[in-house]
Length: 144
Image (cartoon, rainbow, N blue to C red; front, side, top):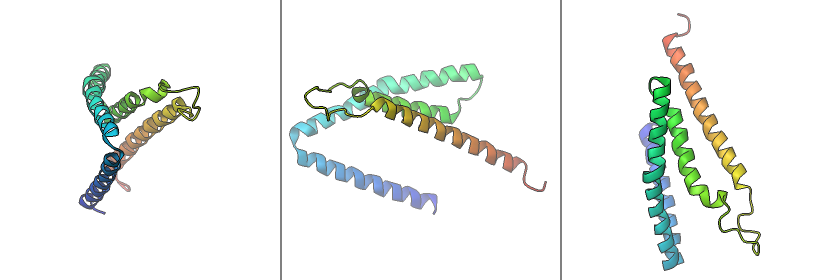
């Protein structure tokens, strides 16, 4: 499958999911729509005011320590975990939990975050390792 076809397919899936979400949101009414818009705007403000500067500072620090370029995988891990962590603050802090409704926040969200962090770091390490292995193969072709 070519890159163009794959990108088109992913774009179509994303557009369809977005359209479905917007339809569901509009069916729910004004209060939910206002809350969703406030949440989305807050996400942009938190990302641009907190996550992006933190990732840039981390990258600058790592570049200074390593005396060179920052590994792309580290930047990806920082962006993913930073963004997800900010969005997850309400559930990780158990804000909104109530004694009279035990079904609210009824999971160990901290453990879920740890699994996500481990998975993200693991995938980044596997991609970096695969890149090094394929780089070695290009430099030293078999039978040379």
